[in-house]
Length: 103
Image (cartoon, rainbow, N blue to C red; front, side, top):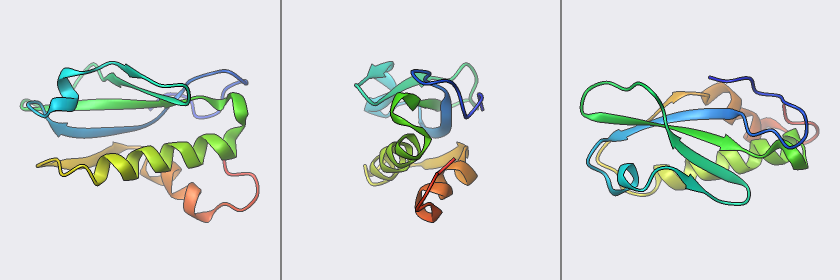
């Protein structure tokens, strides 16, 4: 996983998730939004795609943590045949634990 705390405006990888390589999401990468983006990771086991989730730290670490958690939760609810968090689970857990500075 990339560095988790960058200067304002940086887009570090905060999590990597795995899905089957024939899922629709694998065909629409990269995907960019104002607050997060998905990119295909360089390596994944045969039959799977690893998706790096980048978030914008320009609005602060706590905001970025909550965006990351929301994105992963939404992906997890998409009904993929297989879905797992490959990297970043501990970081994502901060979103549920933080009430002050989140990362």
